[in-house]
Image 1 (cartoon, rainbow, N blue to C red):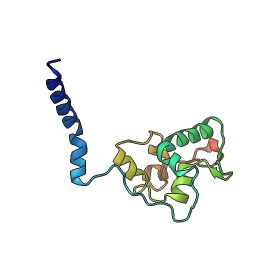
Image 2 (image 1 turned 180 degrees about the vertical axis):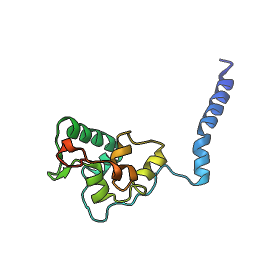
Image 3 (image 1 turned 90 degrees about the vertical axis):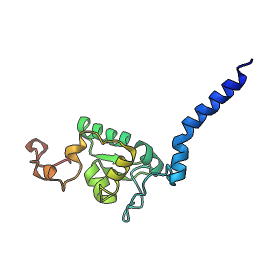
Image 4 (image 1 turned 60 degrees about the horizontal axis):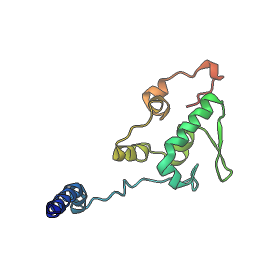
Length: 145
């Protein structure tokens, strides 16, 4: 019972140390809002609701990969009944988010994450590697990037 004062002082010191990053960010005027992104000017409807895309777009892209590679399914039916081609480059980056650096890379840099290794080759047809990659003859001459 006599240590009650020391415990209170210790708890206050612990809370003070734990809260230093929050206080520092508040003093610097930083918020956890995230970067502002350029949204599509042409498309009014996304493949999925924006709240889902913000938190789970990688699940959708992994599902698309599995459907295309394992099931040879090339179209995706959205919740609202609209169908989209299963293609990150052809659908997302061509129709909606035309500037990868201003959309994908900006958020990934802010979050400190990297996309999966498959997008190193299959992401942007303007990159030298993707443009130089030959079309596989087994695909019937179609390039499924």
